[in-house]
Image (cartoon, rainbow, N blue to C red; front, side, top):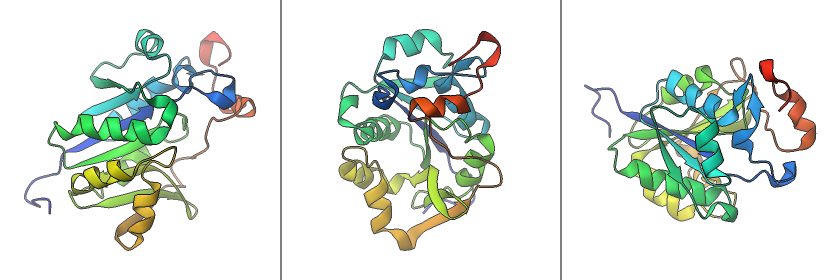
Length: 207
């Protein structure tokens, strides 16, 4: 259990390695939202929501993402196994965070620009080493997800393909705290060309 005389250290973990297969091979991290790459917005949401340190897992076009996005203050982890799916990125991120001594991690996805600091902060408030928490939107479960450090090893072992922590959380439903975030965030995904209309092109034009 976390010592309640001190505040837990809550890291941020941003999964941003995907190649955007359904977007014709356009890495989601590089899509433009409000004039900046999506990865930059998501990293800022984690920091503004009270998470630190923030680790960002890149994969597809990692060098281009580093060059295009301002990830100052973030630790960048490159997942060479990103084609295997999100599970490989979650494993890489949790392995990287293990050395930080953080008590918990808030996990966000790069392709959800409607999820900002307010949702991160609400989920972060559930932090403890033995905690599991997940945002819900009018009863529909989504991200951010909080994983207490006591669970990291087991979560990593169960993370395969694109499932991430889903199977682990489902198996521990009785321990999982659900945090309503529908009033402060909109958890839509940018997955297909039709979804690109939901991005704010900013001053420089389209995504």
